[in-house]
Structure formats: structure tokens, C-alpha cells
Length: 186
Image (cartoon, rainbow, N blue to C red):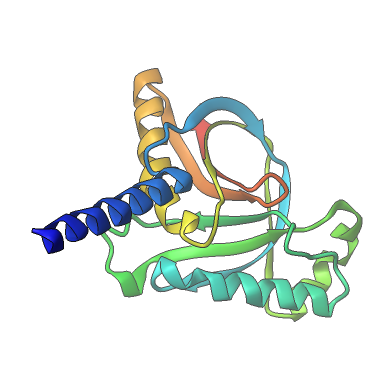
């Protein structure tokens, strides 16, 4: 009987710890969805084909190439991930994405040099968007966030009868937020 009592106590403590961690990560929180203008952003990026979970290394490659050219890049630099394919429909080895870092305004003149480093440059114009905010707590936020962010965008857009434009993830590192962004097509 004593063993059962201790077993139940341990199960309760572990369950409470897991539940607390999931709450902290934002699993049970409603996302703040709003309409706002996003952009313009000029990004240095690399195209990647493969599992989305491996894009972190691509962001690091872009960051390192930018640092090599003397551009301002830090852990607090904003970045953007454009994920073109639905992983529930497209096989993992064929998922397409663009992984980029926002070029600081003072560094825009150096953008042509990025091409020599194997990077591409794109500008995401200022547009009206639907944005769902998800907190960045740790690396798991980048796995949990999409499971909450994209459905929230889809639901909001459907309620408003918006035509979906490009979707991207804006990593606002200064405010520790992932902004799941859906451009509103006119």
C-alpha cells in the first residue's frame, strides 16, 4: 500500500511538472491574432529543400555569410522563414523554404556583395497582413508554434473571407515572438 501511495505521488508530481512546462511553452494559450501592416523587409536568404526541422542550420549559414561581409547580425537580428509547402501533403525531402535574415538599413548598400557569398536578396513589400503571435521560450517554440499559428491564421482568414497571399514566419528576436504572417490578397 505504501508503494502505491508513493507511486501516485510521483506520478502526480511528474504530471504537474509536464503540465506546467506545456503551459509555459504556450501550448494551451490562445494566440493573439490581429491585422496590421508588415514590411518592408529586405532579407538575405538561402533556398532550402528538405525537412523544415533542419532549417536552423540554413539560418546559421546565412548569418555567418553576412558576418563575413561585415554586416550587422546578432542573436537579436530579425529573420524570416518562408515555408512554401504543407508538410502534411508534400514529402519531407521535397519541402521548400527560404531562410533569411533581415538586412539592417545601414547595411542595404552591401546587399550586392551577398550574391557573391551564394545568398539571394529579396524584399518583402509593406502589405496588410493577418498576424498570429506566439512566444519564443526556447527551441521547442519553433516546433510548437506552427501547430498553433497556421490554424489560427486560416481560421481568421476564413471568418473574414480573405484570400490568402504569401505566408511567412517573422522571428522578432527583440521581443521573443514568432509572428505567423499571412498577406491579405486583394
